[in-house]
Image (cartoon, rainbow, N blue to C red; front, side):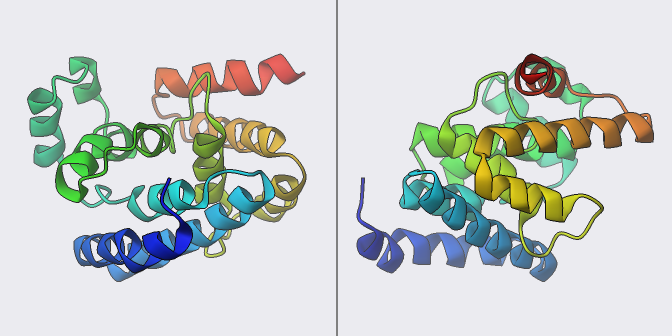
Length: 196
C-alpha cells in the first residue's frame, strides 16, 4: 500500500478535486467529516489510513446522481435487476461503487466494498467497511438523538458501534414505515441479534 505522504500528494489531491466538483457544498462538508472520523477510527483500530481516507472521500460520490444514471448503470454493469425497485439511498453505495471505479479509477476492491455497504451494512464486513459504516454515522456534522452515544461507543469497540448504528437505523426505518433493504435485515441479524 502507498505511504501516506505519497498518497496525500497524489491520489488524495485527485480525489478531492474530482469529488468536490461532483457534489454540493453541503455534501462535501459531510464527506470531509466522514474522512476525519474514518481516519480517527482507522488509527484506533489499525486499519490502513490510505484505504480509510480513500473510501471516505468517495463514499458519497454518486449521492447526487439522477435516477436515470443509476438505472442505466445497473444495466451497464449487469448488477442485480432487483436493485431497480430501490432508490438513491441504496443505489449510491452499491451502484455508486461502479461509477467510482469508472470515473475515479479506484480498483482497490476493499475500498469499493466499503463504499457498497456503507449505508446498508452487510452480514460480514471487513474492518475497513466497519470504519466507513460507523464514520458515516458519527461524523462531526451529524446531529441526532443518540449520536453522542454512538461516538463514545466507537472509541471503545468498533463492532459494538456497528451494532448500535444498525439497531438504531433499523428502528428509524421501521418508524418511517418504509421498505427495508434485505441486506439491512441481514446486517441486523448478524451484528445485533447474534450479540444479544
